[in-house]
Image (cartoon, rainbow, N blue to C red; front, side, top):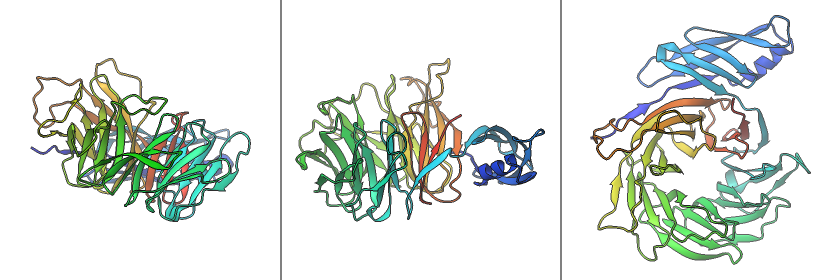
Length: 440
């Protein structure tokens, strides 16, 4: 029996709300309405209004909601919105606190330095910009030139001064974030590179590609050390196991996402052939666009985001299989959810999740970006696995709800979402802006 998809609500709000609030605080207007719309699959949408007013005494604003929505002002960058008709509880709606860097043609990928000093954005035709955010040289921007295809991945090395990038041009480049120089270019993939991972201090890296391979590179020598071939293109990947300072991959596993709706768990110790330990299968053949995982005492939790807008949640068995059997076990999702039918563009589990509840469930926050321009965070609750649990659909008790909406993109695609070391949320927008949100 196929797992039903849970439909989550969407809250959208006029993206000029911060500007309206500022103008009223400054006394330019006495009051103004902004629109708020709420949606849920299979239900009539609700289109309400929030009136922004100057608070008595001046200098501050207050809000009044009507026409089916409820709203509470949290601060100048966030509200709490509810819609009783659609049973949407009070939900945080955040606007960006800053948009420090932009890129003509849209931001497709971004990365923030581990020390928080710099941000790099990449877009169409290989355009890449690096901006210094704080400290010496704050506000300075440099171009990282070399790619000739759309940028598909950006990572900072641990030093925060060197950047690793990939592109549709099938190449991988190493750039200095200080002067923009390109000391290394790694070539060998025969189709676009889709994802990157820097091992340890960065002497070696892993890359995936639509050519169906995962490759281990020696960066200094710009050579492939080892290659793993898959029967399907690899659209994204995630590593399991402890990250070692020297980058050693002995005993580590990789979960490779594919364009046929599956993901394969393989050992990086494997030498020849395709020998999956486990296979994850979503409930459609829609290409998987994004993968992320979070550690848990009861087994790692995996999220797969598909092109059809569905996010599927899995829990890997603990312990994991140590060797391939006659046929790899196929794992089905515990939960599948969506808000629309447009592509999921990126997923990442938040490292700043809500406080753990009193129960023994695993509670996680998943950050999700999508092509409809409505990035959000989802709160997941997974009960401990039970060997005696009924295997019927819906019996596992996994639940999901919208935790936060990240507003301000209008209808432009959100191409990537990530969390920086300070807990700020960044969104790469197709409108050319990289926005940073501060959580309440």
